[in-house]
Image (cartoon, rainbow, N blue to C red; front, side, top):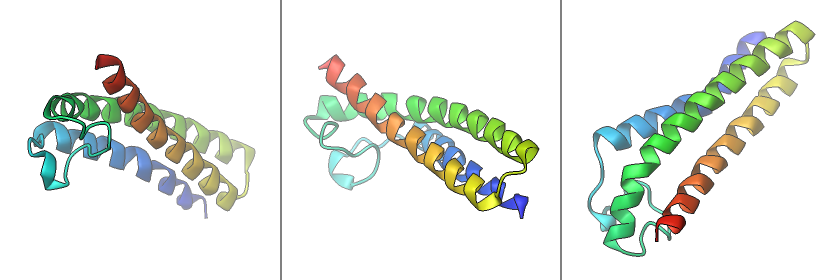
Length: 114
């Protein structure tokens, strides 16, 4: 039952994986539909290029932090012997919050640059 706590690491893992993928294979074509694709990043080619250069690092950094937070929470939940479903829902919420923070941080960084 407590094996479900591994699910809490999915969001951090995906954030890090996507960050490394974007870093290794940056998208240069704004019209491809790939890459860090938001209205702010599509304002101009300069916005696009800058977004593609900073987004991977932000997602990798926040993915790592999220992973550590999720591990600490999972260990705490195991020690406290809380219900596994509660732990998974809480971990999912924390993961989604970090994912939203990654998007917000990237958007704010792009807006501050221009």
